[in-house]
Image (tube, rainbow, N blue to C red; front, side):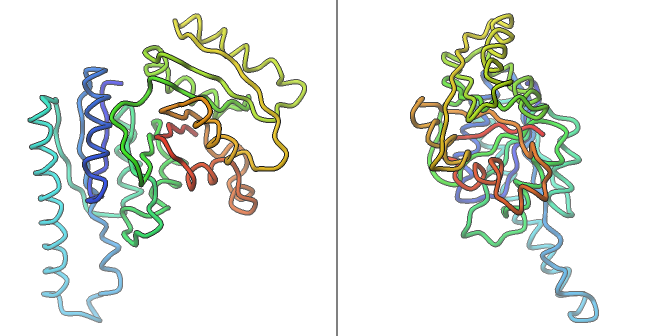
Length: 272
């Protein structure tokens, strides 16, 4: 992980996101890109036929000034921490801009959607759509709590899917440095009962000390079981694949991805 992308703009969680990013950057000797996507759809209701051009120009100027304030604070924090960093500001639709940036970084770091937020740059679409379409793994930071260090005690949600496999591969740099790694399979089918042990053996060849565990649940959904397991194993990072079923099915019936995105209590690294 040599290039980390941190989405800027979440004022309330700015320090938390930066501390996580700074910790990872120092651990891996990574370059940090502070990225501020200015959400131009904020102005869609003020089309030229409904508002004078001067009003639109003023709103745009204010948005760009706000972006400059955020990147200035980011630059200052990076200087204090001695990080190799740069900032970028682009105007457009935040998800599309972040997806484009994800093609040239190793990890994108964004915040979990805050139910109380109405910002296009901080809504559910940013997290769900970015996880679905990003070219790199996405690290989601919960909208509550502080996380000085992550990746020391890792829980891997394993379901023998392509998405779970990609998540494990994407998380390898962290897994190699973790003190504890648990591979958890929830309600495994009979033909997947040994899959967790096979993943542990694979990781052992990479120098990762991992153990496999299984659990059978009946009274709660898988997402709730994973969130509960995070607490049971005292994990500080959850690694999982995203949208393993068709997305329409996930949207209709919930699904582990959507449930974890709503309930997460520690940072989650997701890959699709």
